[in-house]
Image (cartoon, rainbow, N blue to C red; front, top):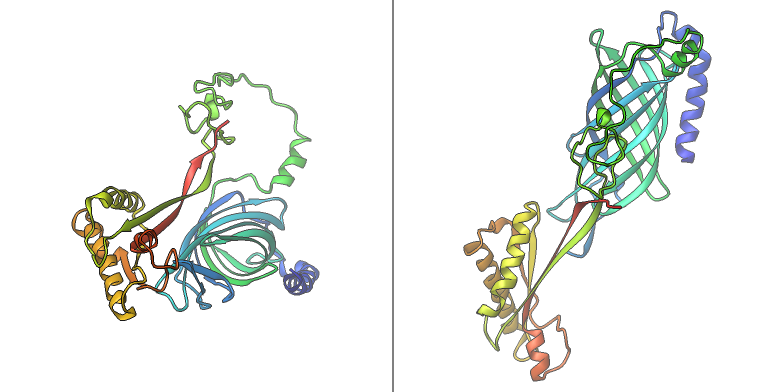
Length: 360
């Protein structure tokens, strides 16, 4: 935050002093506008991505541009508020993985010039499972395409107590209003005489009983008991869902018995439902025999489960990784009949984030 304030405040003060000269023909900020964005983010290399329980650092270079949305509201001739949400993807150093997430926030923009603007704001960065609040400083340039359309390009530095990220954004916006800045409208509206008109709209009927009348309910027939927003649409939260697999084996065998076919089918169904998931199958042995022989046996056990997922359940092999651990990771570190049975296994664990409706 100190870094943004140290840069933004002197620049903002200088532009405010120079504003009269810069804005000789300046007509004020835009009307209400919505836009689509493309942004590329250079994430702090200290950010962590966890892959199969192992932490990796994110690639510190700018990522591939990703889409987003924004909405801006003019308050005065020189100040506007802009909210945005951006989808992000980032490569991971040392692993063939991609970290997914989103950025969203709100900026207060100061327009000292017809084209240039500065901004300060707050937001949240979510990369994989990690979320942190960030402070933002923005420097941008906007230009009209015609009366309704305009484009803008900007650079933003966002910082938190742990990370410093850089973002470059290009956006195209469409003006949906024509009445000027919001606060200016309020001041002039108070001077206008009241207009009394008949109201033809039924403002009381609420067919689905969600507390939002039909005339402004954008999501009719909302299920009973769902928490809704001001538009009458269900409010969702995110929840973590996990699927685990353990397949046991006979002594010196890599054959999967019928006892475990149902467990493998449930893992396959989970992967079909969540088509962006990948799984790592970990094969293990008991402590009897040489390390070299048991390493090969553990790899065969992992591949045996993978073959069932591919051949019997249609899971693409590119989504499956097999690893043999030999006798190096016993559940019970001893040689006995009960311990040997527990140690001879193939294991996997999948976890995904899903949207769950809030209920009363």
